[in-house]
Image 1 (cartoon, rainbow, N blue to C red):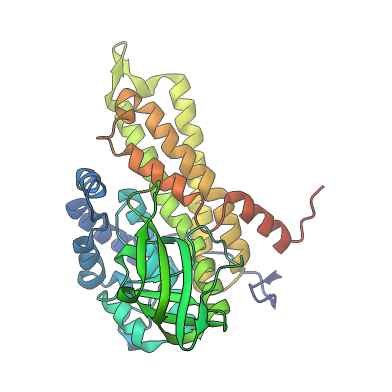
Image 2 (tube, rainbow, N blue to C red; image 1 turned 90 degrees about the vertical axis):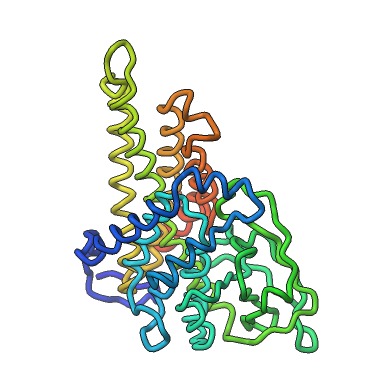
Length: 370
């Protein structure tokens, strides 16, 4: 027997860790698009500009391919897909370190609005014409307490830090002290950029000073659902980052020669790559299990905690190895290795650290500390 995230007993079921033909076709389509429109040099140029978000690429993904509405039912203009398909998209976005608000809008904000059943905003998100951000810090783990705005005479007051992709949002979803979640137009708040390690997913402080908002539902269940899905699917993005690092490092070491032989032929290097390959394979299993659990609703909290407890160290290790094994070129700003390293480091703090998820997992399975 196994337990779902509601605590009810259900017959044990094996998670489906394999990719379907449809998921592989989706991967190929997304990878082709990103290969044409998200080259490393264009990402580097964009993060050095005043507009780090690539909204033209977002339009291609959201409007052209319909990826913004994967989790939204068809009767609301979405694709009616599952978290498994979203996980595949996030793998590819992670590989390219794409500067688009997919995780924050198409996953986190969408899940919050699905919990509230707000048809109006969901239709806008499904079309890709509206980008939303949940006004909860990127560092908040599922189940953790979060700041709320003060509701006074029908308007909201508060300050929220560490809000990812707030600069690209048209709507902010703001939790308030009356227990509600409010949709606030972005032009009614002040968005102040924060210093971010990962420049492809910039953070900001959102100040709400007397802004009107429309109540869309209850904040607590919406935020919990949103952060659980975001944490679980973040593992797929981390998988994409780690897999890119491993693949590119192997490719480089086959071509780079030293002492008249490929560097990848040295035994010490082979051992490092073999260890990294095992870690990435295990990460793929953990990430796929989390995506499948989110899609089926079986053992969701446990699967998400396992995935996040494992994903962060592997993604950071893979990208650190990529920088080191590329030698001098890996240390340069022009090489994209640092983009993946920064994304991996930032992701390791997003939606709870690996240590926080290990503690959560221990509580979920009643594993007492020695």
